[in-house]
Image 1: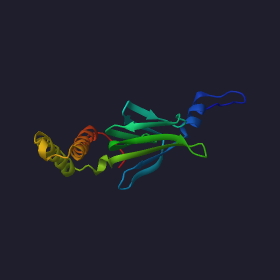
Image 2 (image 1 turned 60 degrees about the vertical axis):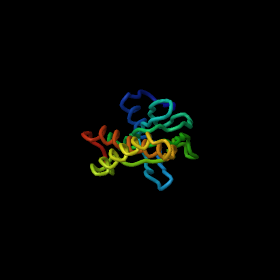
Image 3 (image 1 turned 135 degrees about the vertical axis):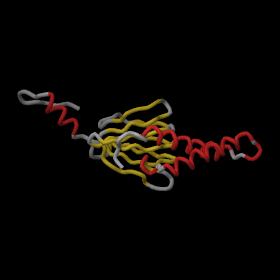
Image 4 (image 1 turned 90 degrees about the vertical axis):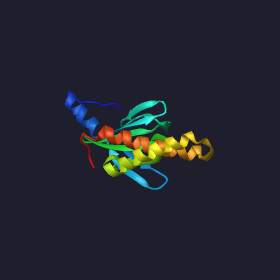
Length: 166
Protein backbone atom coordinates (compact mmCIF):
# COMPACT_ATOMS: atom_id res chain seq x y z
CA UNK A 1 0.00 0.00 0.00
CA UNK A 2 1.40 3.42 -0.92
CA UNK A 3 0.47 6.67 0.83
CA UNK A 4 1.12 10.01 -0.84
CA UNK A 5 1.03 13.06 1.40
CA UNK A 6 0.69 16.62 0.15
CA UNK A 7 2.85 18.39 2.67
CA UNK A 8 3.54 16.77 6.02
CA UNK A 9 2.06 13.47 7.16
CA UNK A 10 2.25 12.39 10.75
CA UNK A 11 2.77 8.81 11.82
CA UNK A 12 -0.56 9.00 13.69
CA UNK A 13 -2.42 9.81 10.46
CA UNK A 14 -0.79 6.91 8.63
CA UNK A 15 -1.53 4.48 11.48
CA UNK A 16 -5.14 5.70 11.61
CA UNK A 17 -5.60 5.24 7.85
CA UNK A 18 -4.06 1.77 7.97
CA UNK A 19 -6.08 0.68 11.03
CA UNK A 20 -9.40 1.40 9.30
CA UNK A 21 -8.67 -1.45 6.88
CA UNK A 22 -10.25 -4.78 7.71
CA UNK A 23 -10.52 -8.22 6.18
CA UNK A 24 -13.53 -10.45 5.73
CA UNK A 25 -13.35 -13.65 7.78
CA UNK A 26 -15.57 -16.64 7.02
CA UNK A 27 -15.42 -19.85 9.08
CA UNK A 28 -17.39 -22.73 7.59
CA UNK A 29 -17.89 -26.33 8.72
CA UNK A 30 -19.81 -29.11 6.95
CA UNK A 31 -22.74 -28.41 9.29
CA UNK A 32 -23.00 -24.60 9.14
CA UNK A 33 -21.52 -21.16 8.72
CA UNK A 34 -19.85 -20.44 12.08
CA UNK A 35 -18.74 -16.85 11.56
CA UNK A 36 -18.81 -14.24 8.81
CA UNK A 37 -17.51 -10.88 9.95
CA UNK A 38 -15.16 -8.01 9.14
CA UNK A 39 -12.10 -8.24 11.43
CA UNK A 40 -8.83 -6.39 11.93
CA UNK A 41 -6.70 -9.54 11.89
CA UNK A 42 -6.88 -13.28 12.45
CA UNK A 43 -4.30 -15.70 13.84
CA UNK A 44 -4.66 -19.37 13.04
CA UNK A 45 -2.79 -22.67 13.17
CA UNK A 46 -1.64 -24.02 9.80
CA UNK A 47 0.13 -27.28 9.10
CA UNK A 48 3.31 -25.20 8.67
CA UNK A 49 2.92 -23.22 11.92
CA UNK A 50 0.82 -20.39 13.32
CA UNK A 51 0.26 -17.35 11.12
CA UNK A 52 -1.44 -13.98 11.52
CA UNK A 53 -3.29 -12.56 8.54
CA UNK A 54 -3.70 -8.82 8.18
CA UNK A 55 -5.49 -6.79 5.49
CA UNK A 56 -3.52 -6.78 2.20
CA UNK A 57 -2.07 -10.25 2.90
CA UNK A 58 -0.75 -12.08 -0.15
CA UNK A 59 -2.93 -14.86 -1.62
CA UNK A 60 -2.46 -18.15 0.21
CA UNK A 61 -3.87 -21.66 0.44
CA UNK A 62 -2.79 -23.82 3.37
CA UNK A 63 -3.88 -26.74 5.50
CA UNK A 64 -5.33 -25.96 8.93
CA UNK A 65 -4.00 -27.69 12.00
CA UNK A 66 -5.99 -28.18 15.19
CA UNK A 67 -5.84 -25.32 17.66
CA UNK A 68 -7.36 -21.91 18.17
CA UNK A 69 -8.31 -19.25 15.68
CA UNK A 70 -8.25 -15.77 17.21
CA UNK A 71 -9.91 -12.94 15.32
CA UNK A 72 -9.41 -9.38 16.59
CA UNK A 73 -11.97 -6.60 16.19
CA UNK A 74 -11.25 -3.20 17.78
CA UNK A 75 -8.92 -4.84 20.30
CA UNK A 76 -11.44 -7.54 21.29
CA UNK A 77 -10.43 -11.18 20.82
CA UNK A 78 -12.83 -13.72 19.33
CA UNK A 79 -11.36 -17.18 20.03
CA UNK A 80 -12.55 -20.33 18.28
CA UNK A 81 -11.49 -23.96 18.61
CA UNK A 82 -10.80 -25.53 15.21
CA UNK A 83 -9.96 -29.04 14.03
CA UNK A 84 -8.24 -29.45 10.65
CA UNK A 85 -9.31 -28.15 7.28
CA UNK A 86 -8.07 -25.54 4.83
CA UNK A 87 -7.60 -21.78 4.70
CA UNK A 88 -7.69 -19.58 1.60
CA UNK A 89 -6.63 -15.93 1.55
CA UNK A 90 -7.47 -13.82 -1.50
CA UNK A 91 -8.68 -10.38 -2.53
CA UNK A 92 -12.24 -9.98 -3.79
CA UNK A 93 -13.39 -7.72 -6.64
CA UNK A 94 -13.48 -4.68 -4.31
CA UNK A 95 -9.89 -5.29 -3.18
CA UNK A 96 -10.90 -6.50 0.29
CA UNK A 97 -8.82 -9.33 1.70
CA UNK A 98 -11.00 -12.41 2.30
CA UNK A 99 -10.05 -15.29 4.57
CA UNK A 100 -12.13 -18.43 4.15
CA UNK A 101 -11.60 -21.26 6.63
CA UNK A 102 -13.14 -24.60 5.70
CA UNK A 103 -12.85 -26.62 8.91
CA UNK A 104 -13.92 -30.11 9.91
CA UNK A 105 -14.99 -28.63 13.25
CA UNK A 106 -15.10 -25.10 14.69
CA UNK A 107 -16.69 -23.76 17.85
CA UNK A 108 -16.57 -20.42 19.71
CA UNK A 109 -14.86 -20.73 23.09
CA UNK A 110 -17.98 -19.37 24.84
CA UNK A 111 -19.87 -22.46 23.60
CA UNK A 112 -17.43 -24.72 25.45
CA UNK A 113 -19.24 -25.01 28.76
CA UNK A 114 -17.74 -26.88 31.70
CA UNK A 115 -20.18 -29.70 30.96
CA UNK A 116 -19.02 -29.95 27.32
CA UNK A 117 -15.38 -29.85 28.42
CA UNK A 118 -15.93 -32.65 30.93
CA UNK A 119 -17.72 -34.71 28.26
CA UNK A 120 -14.83 -34.07 25.86
CA UNK A 121 -12.29 -35.23 28.48
CA UNK A 122 -14.34 -38.36 29.20
CA UNK A 123 -14.74 -39.06 25.47
CA UNK A 124 -11.01 -38.63 24.88
CA UNK A 125 -10.23 -41.13 27.65
CA UNK A 126 -12.75 -43.62 26.20
CA UNK A 127 -11.23 -43.25 22.74
CA UNK A 128 -7.72 -43.80 24.10
CA UNK A 129 -8.91 -47.09 25.61
CA UNK A 130 -10.41 -48.15 22.26
CA UNK A 131 -7.06 -47.47 20.60
CA UNK A 132 -5.63 -50.47 22.45
CA UNK A 133 -8.30 -52.79 21.01
CA UNK A 134 -7.25 -52.53 17.37
CA UNK A 135 -9.82 -55.03 16.09
CA UNK A 136 -12.83 -52.85 16.87
CA UNK A 137 -11.63 -49.42 15.84
CA UNK A 138 -12.46 -47.36 12.78
CA UNK A 139 -9.15 -45.46 12.90
CA UNK A 140 -10.22 -42.56 10.72
CA UNK A 141 -13.30 -41.89 12.84
CA UNK A 142 -11.34 -42.53 16.03
CA UNK A 143 -8.60 -40.03 15.18
CA UNK A 144 -11.11 -37.32 14.22
CA UNK A 145 -13.12 -37.78 17.44
CA UNK A 146 -10.01 -37.84 19.62
CA UNK A 147 -8.57 -34.72 17.94
CA UNK A 148 -11.86 -32.88 18.36
CA UNK A 149 -12.14 -33.78 22.06
CA UNK A 150 -8.53 -32.93 22.89
CA UNK A 151 -8.70 -29.62 21.00
CA UNK A 152 -11.85 -28.58 22.86
CA UNK A 153 -10.18 -29.26 26.20
CA UNK A 154 -6.91 -27.52 25.26
CA UNK A 155 -8.55 -24.36 23.89
CA UNK A 156 -11.07 -24.10 26.73
CA UNK A 157 -8.23 -24.33 29.28
CA UNK A 158 -6.18 -21.74 27.38
CA UNK A 159 -9.02 -19.17 27.31
CA UNK A 160 -10.61 -19.95 30.69
CA UNK A 161 -9.23 -16.84 32.47
CA UNK A 162 -8.83 -14.49 29.52
CA UNK A 163 -11.17 -11.77 28.31
CA UNK A 164 -12.83 -12.26 24.93
CA UNK A 165 -15.92 -11.25 22.99
CA UNK A 166 -18.78 -13.71 23.24
